[in-house]
View 1 (cartoon, helix red, strand yellow):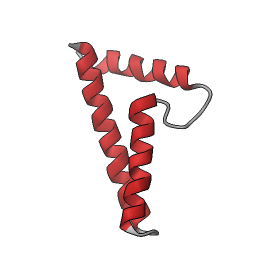
View 2 (cartoon, helix red, strand yellow):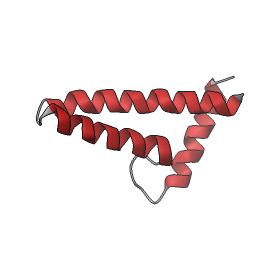
View 3 (cartoon, helix red, strand yellow):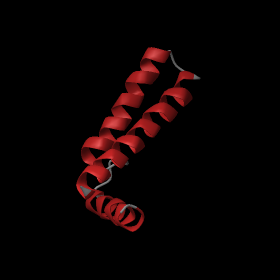
View 4 (cartoon, helix red, strand yellow):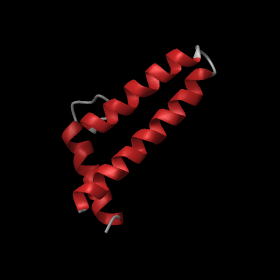
Length: 73
């Protein structure tokens, strides 16, 4: 059950990334391109949980897991 809750929160975070990115980029580029960029960023976060493309991906994943364990049942 906990793993499903973590996946759900990951989806929510990815949705927030996608929505925010789409809004911000659409101020400067055509909306279709902004949506493409947002999808790229959200999928990078969701599928790799390494949102910054850093070689310290394992440390980010551990930090996110610790945060989930602290606040989620």
